Image (cartoon, rainbow over all chains, first blue to last red; front, side, top):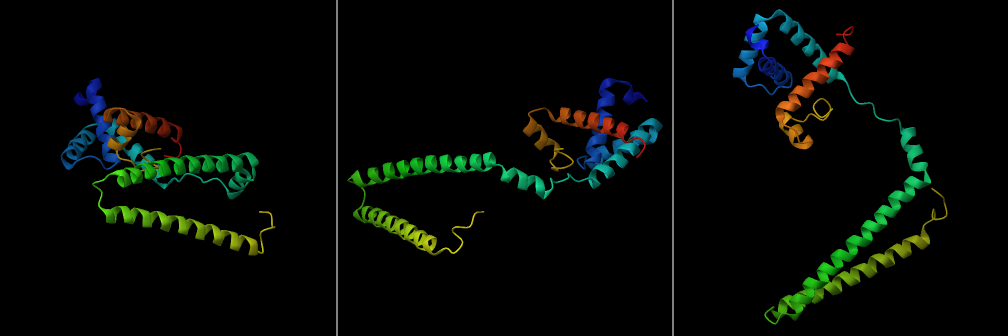
Length: 155
Length: 43
């Protein structure tokens, strides 16, 4: 067939087939592919094979690892330690950065003589609220922790 | 994998992998051809 005779022609036909298989071929080019298929028996055979392959691959699913694999993974001290350390480092870094950013912003606003008094008051009220909230959460955790009936049970 | 299991479009695969869209199609064709050869008896 003339169009498949050249490398560029063969590449074009392959791309048409791939895009048609994957639903990315516009109607006009779909007609072009149909014409090519009608004129070339070998191409039609290949196309039919690709269609069957597409059906097969669409019905396939990646097998998920069984639960035992995850249990083994999390049973490993190293895995638990690694995740724990990562969270601690991430938390420390985030807290320092956010605190520094907040403090810098607040200090600028408080030192700026053009900042309205009610904004300064709102900042102070917000800071006091945050501190009280923090203390309240810590007190709650300590309270619950002391009365947790399962606190001595090892996970 | 990106096409069949993740359901990405050609343009998305090209951007993700950093290759031209034509290369995405060529590689898909080559992979499917090899897979079809392996599954010749099933197909």
